[in-house]
Image 1 (cartoon, rainbow, N blue to C red):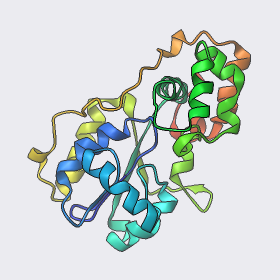
Image 2 (cartoon, rainbow, N blue to C red):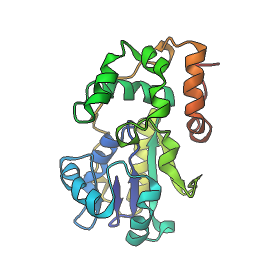
Image 3 (tube, rainbow, N blue to C red):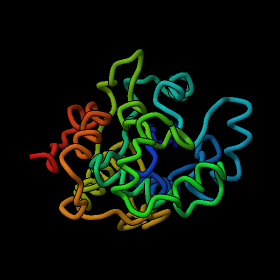
Image 4 (cartoon, rainbow, N blue to C red):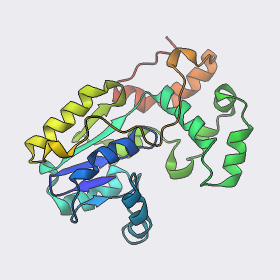
Length: 230
């Protein structure tokens, strides 16, 4: 998560939606009065202190960060944005990531490694009744709600947009006074875990339906279609 009052932007970092890469892309714009929590070496170092004192973390929701954003700059003047991802591809990426990440609950790690493939993982339904580390299994829309409603002030970028999203962000920040020469030409590919192409999941209609149901708000609010069940 970044709350940058120098330029006037906030980046909400949704787990497994390119957030680490975006944070590293934006990091050169941050100065001593800006918050960069998680996503970079510096951000990871300061995260424990901010978590203890201010309850702010790498994957804090918009609701959790709201008070800090308001103190940094009036909300109407702050460019608040996030990146979202196709729910099927995101869940597949979460599956791959949690099978190799050693730094969390060893019992869950053991369970994740016990699944022979993604299909068996979906069949278990574990993602529907456990939040997972950092609430990683939760719908992406959970990060964007204020008082139970998705905040209209948050600009959504889809990681599938690629260069067009980068260019739009660069233009917005430049108009706010940022030096565009500080920003890399593209996002670094950091903390990346592989996900299967959508057509390669091979899930039954029943299993696809379980994903569609649990992530229904992501499909409806973030502009993704139920392509695996069509």
